[in-house]
Image (cartoon, rainbow, N blue to C red; front, side):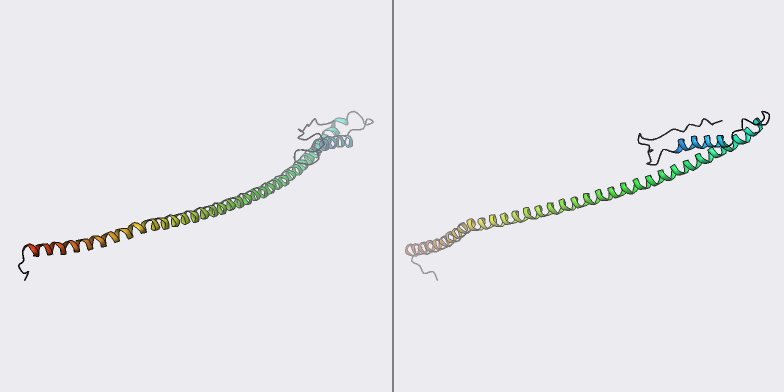
Length: 178
């Protein structure tokens, strides 16, 4: 007398379940049930009046054994699932750490490259500014010198004009200036 307990199989076609363990839960339960019922099955030679009395305790033992096997298999599956989950978490963490390290290295490289390029551009801009300033000084020097020469010439011309006009005044008005 068997118990029609059917557990869902979560597996693949190669005989392993999703968690990587052997698909033995339902098969073990079925065979254990068969063994329990075969070991405790009443003899065909026994009288008919004792058969119902022996069947009830035998079926209780078979049910207890079946429940025990189901609990053991559930514990094994839980342990396998926990182990696989731990492994998956460790793998995911390792991959995340690797990606973070690679991202940080790339960011550092880009930052260093940007700084180097900025330094080059800044140096080029400073060089150009100094060159333009020097060119302006060179272009500005002749006009400044010319302005200074013209101011000196103006001063000299005023002096000559003053002396000339003073001489003319003295010729027109011969009175002494004292």
